[in-house]
Length: 549
Image (cartoon, rainbow, N blue to C red; front, side, top):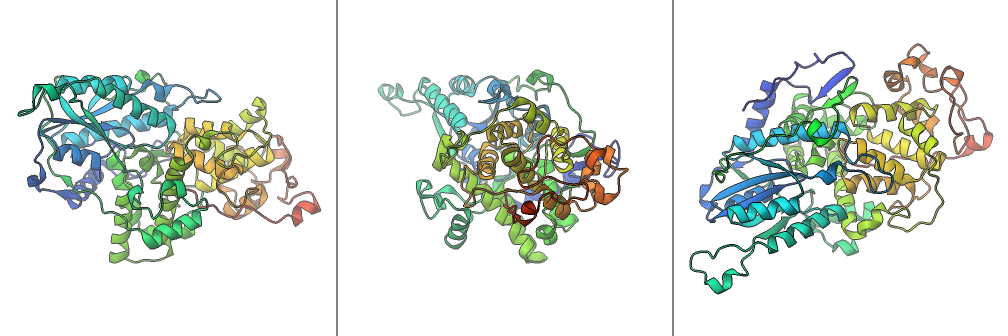
């Protein structure tokens, strides 16, 4: 398996930048081949279909454990994999007009597509890349190749559901010629079908012990119920060879960043994530097996600096380059071959959170994006642009906030702990409309998906399914607990490096002015709050175990 050349581990452009995964190309190639062999099937007898089937790739940019791909293969004689570069993905966000996809996530997507194309070609297929709307492209392809079915993974949020509806309507306008033995009178109702498959969660939606309309509104109730009553399905075995594809002269090329209407942004500080299934599988191998970090995950997961305090699987989960069921099976393999402990369980605990937000989006639909959230909370929020821009640009005067926001802009990533802190600051201390923060995250995050992003923001803003609606994260407490030496803030705010370690998070007049006082007392240069009442305020920022980090 050939991969584009990459730098040697630890030899990034400077010591301030690291790649995730941090493995050479030849080692990644071996990992991918071994993993594909472990999860592949050579049973050709199961293929008894006819004609052409289309696979519409969306947020499932992988070969391993891709049920839509396997079903298309089994039901046909030729598979046509398609990715539509939909211009709507590069438009603007709904309320505040931010870029819907920032340059860093677009670059990550480009790498995911290049890797998917390469992996399909290694199995006898290819990836047809076309620019335009799926509801226009797919019916046209179905007509040209007389495809009987378009297979795709089902989504849950309104924009994606609308595209599914338009694709289905478009396919109904296509009349296929009669199949052998079919009467001509019946052929007029012979249309390509859109078959949507659930494949984005660890627990399958059909295996839940309740309907989505009866989904528990408290995560712990959901988790205990699925853990006690559900079984996680094993990964779908992928045939070794998936070809042949239909005869196509021009398969299209992976788009450049310029073709997407964006300008390249290079990561010059912090982590640079490599897009694609090969990188995803390599990161799982690196974190679980090579570095043996799974056994300490629970103890380190609240870190903020470096690549290895947490799994960092989330960008590949969001793009569908990595299957949550694959992670589950690798955790179980690790527990069998090495050890099982609280840390191995906690990775699965995080994946259940991710599932929960996905299922909540089915239950609550568009209320996830409304100001009052699923709970229809009535509250007054500010949309002060100057205040928001100070938060967005990392210029609030609070080093812990500013460092996290600068990391987000520079890398497209922020720790789970950091996300909770900056969310609390924006909505609790600044009083800014939480949707502004959510949409900015939508622009920037490599691991953006609407369910987890808006689920977490409604949760943090007190308008979602948090039984403690006034959850508050104290900046002094968070800084002392999670960045006691000021290493994280000094990394992202070099002007603080000269200060003593215990002053970096509390620099006083050595740093820019604080844009707002904290809701429960402001910070003095020693890190203490300046009011007795604030000191008596109980810390209410207990960890919410958000999503796979």
